[in-house]
Length: 332
Ligand code: UT7
View (cartoon, rainbow, N blue to C red):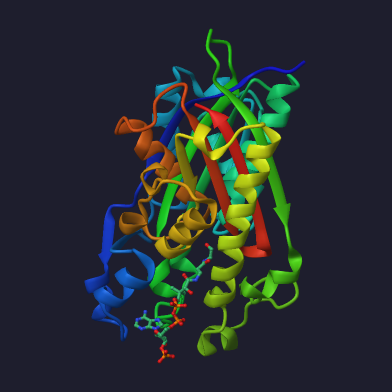
């Protein structure tokens, strides 16, 4: 069996509250000019903590739109892959919570993926294998993050970079008379860089205590410069790997959709590859870095505003904490 795999529908959810760089100027020593010049970010969306905008909620709303676009019902989903480093709870997994919220009664598989910013691409690539071999027909791939909960809002080195949001894709066996397919893929990781971006407090090794909270050491922490260097090199390598595997070149690619961590990372990667900047989708100005959600949000926006058209070649390229990485080359 070697079925073709099609992105049938996408959806996003952006929390209602918007925090601009100017808002951050009021709480930390920073400026809109510094943030925009160094990162390309102008604003980020932040989830309400009152309820209704937690990762499973955002995914619920985004999935309804994606199912509508795909012309499918919740029970047509055979597997949920929920990529997040900020799940609703430690147990149960957020994929199961989403299954219940969507009213899925077919007992479909539901797991979370903790691959940080590469999580959506990990999910898409793993589902592709199962769809191609005929084990499942349709998968729901989710990237949904509430990073605002894990960010130290007093640390100007990191807090300016992140935002909350969700992007999803319904991916399934292509039963239409067209060429849409996943053409090649790549997944990888390098644990030697695990300290570049981590959150060591709150797990089994060091459970959260009142002292940690008082000392404010329980948040995500990042070595920005180290991440920056590895990110550009890895994203460029990924693109070459998937293009080689599909025996294609950059000229064949209509749109590069890179992980949105910093516009300078995206530009440097583009230069390393030699791709026309007009082919690179960038929306970090509006959302900042939403980890696993950046790629599906950027893809959905470009689909709905008409830039991405059926039949075009897309290259999704991700990199994140772990250090994890992955890329997907597909005909949309
Ligand atoms: O999703 C994947 C994970 N994320 C990434 O891969 C992010 C990768 N890294 C980055 O995006 C960049 O390294 C940062 C945006 C985090 C930092 O940019 P940078 O150009 O590497 O700045 P820097 O750390 O070298 O800081 C330059 C200066 C420093 O001052 P001194 O030491 O030169 O006096 C910082 O203290 O800018 C200062 N600075 C700030 N100033 C105003 C750092 N953060 C801020 C701030 N506002 N928010």
